[in-house]
Image 1: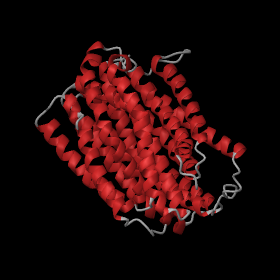
Image 2 (image 1 turned 30 degrees about the vertical axis):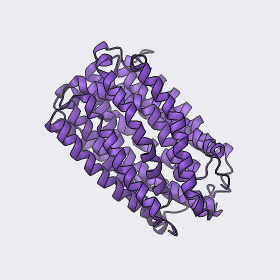
Image 3 (image 1 turned 90 degrees about the vertical axis):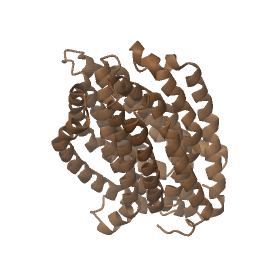
Length: 442
């Protein structure tokens, strides 16, 4: 981790990008299938999908904390210590999956019934979630494999895993949604079943690949330790803030969907299509930002604090270079890309203006995400949490006034992304420039 050239940044980042884009295809598959089932199913899959993400990304936050710790140990050359972090993470996340699965099965229906105004949308969303939450047991554990590969900068494995997962999801969804090979057509419930089964396939791949292709003894993965509370506390000391941060961050996204749903089923369907299409450039952005976070963690561990600013700026420039041409193409040919997700003409026509606003928002989101992810890479996740909470407060005030009170058109509702990104970038930039992160031990 002494070469911080654009080439080396790309070598670390591109497998993460590909894996995230491939995983985005899972959401795209669900949306594309639902867009051909009906407008109600298309909107319901949006709310149900974000409901699942609210819970999943809270757990994902734990693995990000573990990833930061793994990256620091990797930079320090303490390879054997990585295995202990890895297994303590798996123990915790599996137990968390049991708890969250139980709570979701018991209370998700009641929550959706109270928040969603359309009884049809609520019913369809519940049938999806009922099966989707089985994926907790597989996806939670798989996040620790991701943390291991990103933290040790062996990110090419993520590409292979994601390809396997996407292919499995397409096959399972096609069979279960439309009822092929003698099975009944489960509709939106089949999408939940298919996605959960795809996550099981993903976990099996990670286990087999790590066993056969990785020098697992080097990283202490050959020895399964007992539960160590002190080590778990160390991981939680970093990850707790990320977990809470992710929960609130995606919860506000869920609230955004609920607000839009109160505007009608068509605006909700439009929002689902735009959010799904936005997922591709956003996953590229998140992949490069994740690479930046991992590199920053490794650099600090290796004593290269003076290079942090330079590497952050290079990641940001790389984002603009890759994402901007993609957004220009999407903006020029909106109907072409929207037709991937739905064949409902009304949804396509009314989605175009919102799509243009979404494209413009990336001018703000790119610097925001890169700088914010760098703060987590320094290990100061408490500060990152504070920045996120203030940003979300501004975001909630904006969408409550504009969508819930003023009931603005769904197109302008997407301007909230610009507000969110502007506040986050301003605070993140000021913190990193202050130098307060230097010398922090984790």
